[in-house]
Length: 121
Image (cartoon, rainbow, N blue to C red; front, side, top):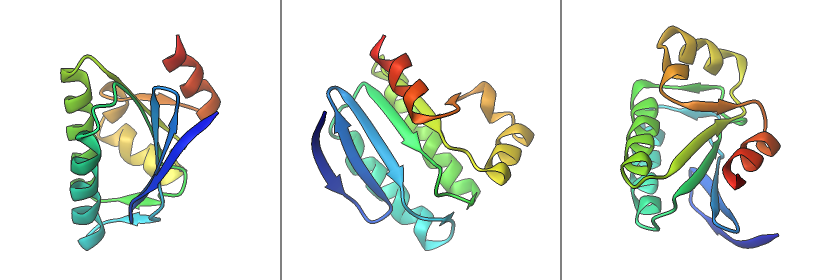
């Protein structure tokens, strides 16, 4: 099932068929980490995946730069007629997303299985 695994510092990239899964490894996306996250996501975008899942289950907090990276990723993928799913939001992240009304912008799934199923359809 797993085709290939590439590792970046801020996230691990797994590929399942035509779906890219970005498993964010940092617990806190802020300061220098958010800049590195942005740079690595930009490199990832060069691979032109149309179906992407971002697993945020390890992330306890993210600053506005990190959230901006997710918004830019969403925009780039949608512009290419792709689909992005977010999974694994911890309670503080859920709170941040609700306060900023980001759940209206992002397609958020409860777990990886649901995200995979919805992208395979």
